Length: 343
Ligand SMILES: Cc1cc2nc3c(=O)[nH]c(=O)nc-3n(C[C@H](O)[C@H](O)[C@H](O)COP(=O)(O)OP(=O)(O)OC[C@H]3O[C@@H](n4cnc5c(N)ncnc54)[C@H](O)[C@@H]3O)c2cc1C
Image 1: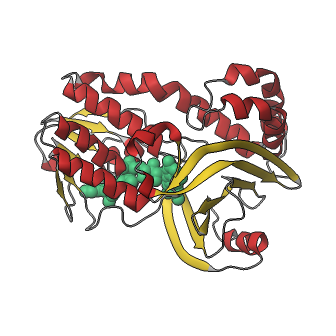
Image 2: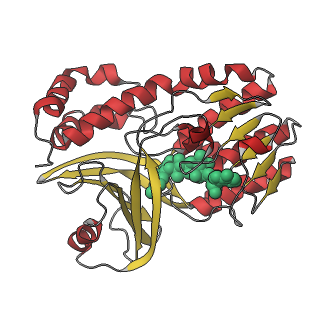
Image 3: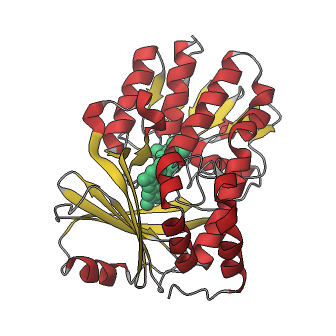
């Protein structure tokens, strides 16, 4: 079986299929696994089984939210971790190869090159979904690694009037801090850094595409010669609230490899949607409320702090929605009729 894309999703799928003796071949267009880098690497503990301690750069103890003069905090010891994405991808590469997968670097391919079933894990920039007329919504992103010592083990999310599309993240990563955002207008990010740190001491700069639309309509296709499966960013299996796609993509890769191993590939679409479909749909709604009414969102967090600290989940954010029902009408009305700016 051929897999397009040697990112985390393609490599993890390959490791599972190889272990089951299905001889996968991964094609990666770049010459080096893990590069170019674009991801912040913030992940929940839900994929701990796959994360070796050596790739962890920082353990996270909660989040601080800012909007104008308002602030909210959620504290939870070791609720998440920041991983070195290039090192994580290499770790998945080693696992795939040691299980017997072949990985071909410098190998740019198209699904039409193959006559058997194909897995397209070709990411947000990938061509396969467009070949099957599937559309994704995304925003350009920019990030800076700063030569600043982290002041805490908390992630910061800033809602700024100049960016009505997304929040600005400030993430501790070992001895440095990464600041980034996704937006149609990335120019003011440097002024934000100047304001937040009083100076700009850039170590490195990264660009990328953050998927914000949720999944594409269809992730499984029959062409003349074969079946094609979309998985990971390529399928839009990304949390619309945060743009985080590692846990969701790996969850879907796990489902895809299991149905292939069980010789029931036709059940892929229904299976992953059963696990994540509703969650991602609700997160799309939550994203809309958050960016339309960031001030109300901060109030919502403050009001529900205790609940969020005890049963909030970074990945399955809407699972406990019922517990927060009393605060939702205000948030929804604020999003519908409130100001779009983050006053
Ligand atoms: C700025 C930014 C910050 C992010 N931060 C986080 C975060 O903190 N936490 C989180 O969980 N997620 C984050 N994400 C999302 C995360 O990076 C993605 O969800 C994840 O990388 C998806 O993995 P993937 O394997 O599907 O795609 P990718 O990692 O994009 O891998 C796809 C691979 O396919 C290859 N490829 C494409 N076309 C071809 C072709 N034709 N032939 C051969 N190879 C091909 C590419 O070169 C690439 O290596 C972030 C994304 C961005 C842009």
